Image (tube, rainbow, N blue to C red; front, top):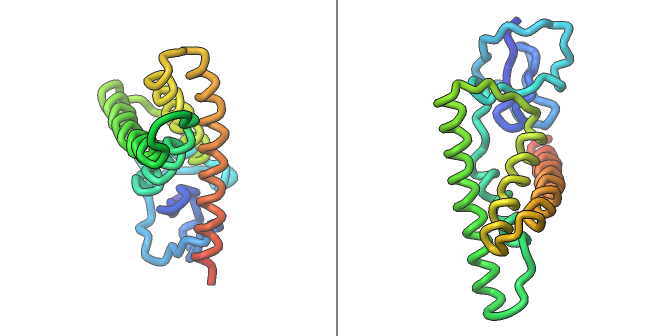
Length: 170
């Protein structure tokens, strides 16, 4: 059965849907030719990163910049300049990690699937692990940052969805 993949939240919708549950207008979205059982719950279908998942890179950059801003406390020096540097570092490292992720998927032909919130949490965990390890060089501190990064990234993703739903509903 053909399904429409929402470009905003990646949830699979019935072919006759005009609006996703997140509020995204689906009238101009091309139906994705996928064989999926109609008995499966639509909103619980995982996203196949290799075929249908095209993440919103802009949202990823914003989320990564926010995570970078709050990745570690600034205790000395020019506060504003260090805050800006942490935000930029978060965005740059997120793009590098995203490229590495895509490279591994392509080279090893990995079939990785997850719900969008899980992908956001995983990327947040890896990002804060790398940022913390680069800044402090302590693996245990970096592991703690990874846990908080996963939680914070998932909460940011939920906030993005809530704002998206609020502004796209008529």
